[in-house]
Image (cartoon, rainbow, N blue to C red; front, side):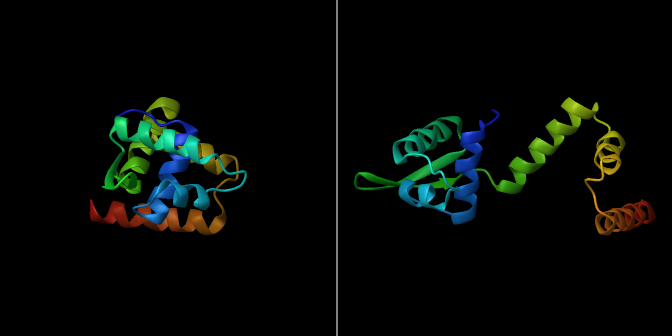
Length: 122
């Protein structure tokens, strides 16, 4: 599956948040400064060509819906991040965030508990 541009991801996030939507609704859900409706319309059509979005026709209007769940896209990107930037090493990725203080103490405790629980179940 293709990578999405930043603008395409922004549209997908709006679509995941709202569910099936018309372009005007997607534009309204975006942060300011909002893109033009014609820009979002073009992006949605590109996303449809890429297989990320489908539509239902209502006369000349189209209501768009995501064909890919946010979780699936996130998992795919997490795997790509792990492979492309950390050589496939989860340890390297986690240590990157821990060493830069990007994970707070509460999150570290939760991670340690998750690791302990997973280790017990293996």
